[in-house]
Image (cartoon, rainbow, N blue to C red; front, side):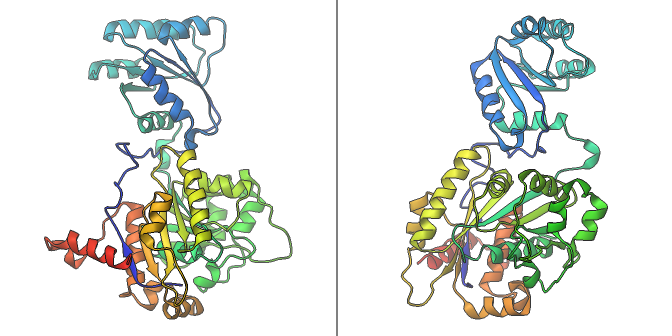
Length: 428
C-alpha cells in the first residue's frame, strides 16, 4: 500500500474549466423542455446543457425563431412542461410578446425568459406575470442548468448532497482505501457529515476497515428501493462516528448481485438528500449500473498505480469521463503505491503527461503503516496522524470539498515555494 505523499492545492482551478462555478442543480425529472432562441450562441449553450448528466432524464429540443416561432408552433400543438424563450427586444416589447405567448400556452406550463437587458424592473414584472426565471444573455451552460434545476427543486428540502465516486483503474490499486480514508477526513477534518456507500456488494471491505459488522446495509436498500425513506435509511446505516456513517455491503456469496440501474440511482438519490457528502466505493467493474454511477457522480477520484496496465486503463477512463461530463471538473487522479522496492515503475511526471491529467495526490508505498491500519480496522489518521499519508488524505478531502486546510507554514511568504518543492521531491 502506501505512505509518503505529495498533494497540490493549486494544480487546477477551484471550479471546472472556464465555468464561473459548477452547476449545483439536482437531477432534473423526466420533463419535456422546448427552447426557442433568437441568438445562435444561446442555442449552442442550451444544446450543451441538454447533454449534461443532470438533464439526462429530460427531453429537450432547441429551435430558432424566438417568441414568434413559439406562438406559431403552439397554435396547433400542446405546450411542454417548460418553455425557454429568448427575446432581443426592449422591456415593453418583450412583455407584450410574452403576453401573446401566454394566450397559446396550456395551464401549468412553466417559462424561462432569456433577455439581453440587465433590468431589475423587467425581472420583477416577469416574475409578477408568472415567468419562472429570467436569465440575462450571454449565459453559461452552468447558469442554464441551474435555472432549469431551480424550477424543479423544493426550496424546503435544502441543498442536495454531493456524490464522490472512487474508482480504481486496476484491481488492487487501493481505491477502497483511498475512499474510506478520504471520507474519514471529510468527517473529522472538514467536519461535514458523510456516508460511505460500499457498492462492492460481494467483496466490499468498508465494514472491515471500520471494524463494523452490520446485519443490514446497502444490499437491503437495493433489493427494495421503493421502500427506502429517511426512517429506513437511518436503520440501515451503521454509524462509525458522529459525522461518518457506513452503508455496508452484504459481502455474502449466497446469491448473484445483478444491480438494477434504476434501483441504484434511487438509493443514492435518497442518501444524498440526508447528508452533504456521499463517498461511493465503486467496485472494479464496468457494467451498466457502474458506468451510470461513475458518470453521474458530482466528483470522480481515479486511483492508479504507476504501471502500464494502470496507465492504459486510466487514460481510457479519463477520456470517457471528459467526453461524457463536459460541464464538470476533470476527474481527480491519485497515484498510489509509488516506490515499491525492486518494481519497475512509470515516473509520476511521465504518467501524468501520458494521460494529460496531473496526479493531485502521490502516495508512496508503506506496507507497515497501511497493513497495521487494515489489520486493526482503523484509518491512517487513527494509526499515525502525523504521517504524510494522513496529511494526503486531509489534503484530498480539502480539494474535494473546496476547503483549504490551514497549516503552520501558511503564514510564511515561502509557503507556496515549500509546497511546490515537496511536490517535486515526491515526484522524483
